Length: 514
Image 1 (cartoon, rainbow, N blue to C red):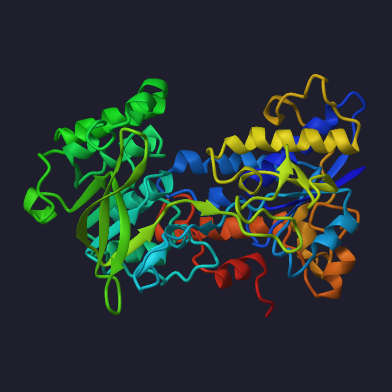
Image 2: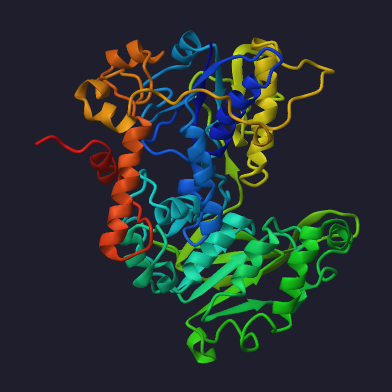
């Protein structure tokens, strides 16, 4: 039996768990595995639950696929266990044959400009965590009393944030957005949203599908400046033209952006920025800007505006500011200019690249040699690149290396196993005990007890028992799901409404005894 701990229950961690079970069973000599998926939160799915916007139901449906991973007889969920506080790296390495770190990238990059710490200036991830109901966020963190908001960045997260701010909250009624958040969106005073990037439209990181959604928002006037949509206006080196010729995504983005710049992306022609949206017959306005970089956030006691500098690329390919500035009226600034992983206690970390140093998922020590039994997957491995599905092939690569090292898997030069999605789960009986019934037994929730659905003692039982910590089982997570479904029914709001804070989540997970 190969015992592996996966730290992180987001897409990267659960794709790794899936690949472990399926690839180990497909080896020439199949190897049984037991995978414990550990997460500091009592809820699984990571970015799928707390990073995908509530109006993107098709993407959120990935949780149904990940659910099948957690329901595999060879996988156990252990929530509420924090690496560095509840268990250490040494604890994990002593208890398991291997550990895969897959905690993602949870920290925003800073702009590094004056005024960034003024009240009203926020990381976009804080706003995303708020509208996604992350238990680390106070549901009252955002009141949306600003009339004008500047969103800095032109990636998918920035587009999500701008769309949620501009969208009619009635369209979110049947989503899983927490009720206090929905109430705040109904009371929002936001009327103008500025979305800006420091380079041109060809350099923007958003996907075409995400971008087009902005032009489909009812009651929202979408404005793009014609000169900023022109690939040659501020790019004398022709970088944007070359990117459009070679990249289908860029061409798709440019079709939408050019249409909006010509006035075809909104019911009426774009108005001047000083004209209130209501004067054009719209509830809100969304302006998409390019070739502007922030230089200072203005305000005395809170955000009052933001100064942007025009940028360009010279004929020699040098990017920089032109010395031409403009100031936007804004009472809130949300930065979305990239994400960084944070170091895990005791685990090697490259502070310049903000990743765990690795070779194909094998964690490397200071001497550059692989460390026995330690692996990494997802954004913590490669940086915040790709989409959710990218983590599947990424995890499969890491697992192939792990099995090569520990279980006689395919070696260098051998035909690699196909990715996990093309393999079947091994035929193994489901756990004999009914998870829900097992958790109804107080003994099952004793500190250090094995997560539900497991007959043998959990490898970290002794460590956690000594600290009085009981890991959250998959069965207890299902209680949270049930509570959210019941809340949605009570509110008449779709299939699920997220519980809005940590107290509500833990109360649903472990109801207080009378």
